[in-house]
Image (cartoon, one colour):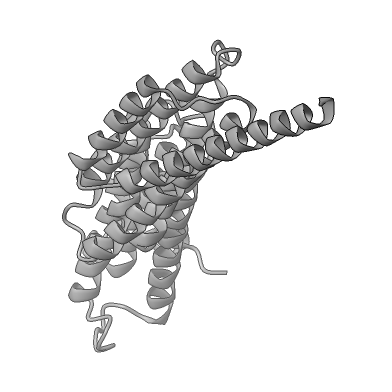
Length: 276
């Protein structure tokens, strides 16, 4: 089998095999950074390796196959080094995605931000895929925050208000972070559309939750309406207007209240007739 070590017994630093060995040693060093979760350092070495291979190709005319300084075995070794580097890069991307998909880091926004930026810098997967992973992570975060709101469960109006604040504050922060991550993207408009769709789905889920609460007890009070509208208005400052979602929810609740009032009135009237 081919071995880079076997091919580099010579100390000729200008030889093809020797320079391949130097690059290969860099590739092997990537494992240390990956094991220590120093992902930016790992990416830096990968980029150095990719650049070194480009210089190597230029020096030894790899593309033209005209170099007398590189034989067939060196050419095969060069392919092996390149494959090893790409495997390390794939492993790096997998580790980065696993962080976004895990519940372990959803509270650590610094780690989430660094992880997402590193994924973008890798240029190995599409920005659309990266954004999907980031937004899924934020959905996990919102779900965790909502699940932790337990102290006010007996007071449904306070509970509804706390859930509203948590969700809409997180939505606003997510939009701000999105702009930091993808402001220079060539497909910014496409990514923005994905962001809006995600935010709309989160808001729909929010009002579905409030509807379930309202089915048990009326939560639509003047203070609730004022506080909820204030939270939704905060999204306007980051370019999102979902006031119509609140208006639709309030309209449905008012219609339900009128229906309940009419039903109660009919029952009372009916009882009066029977008792006569």
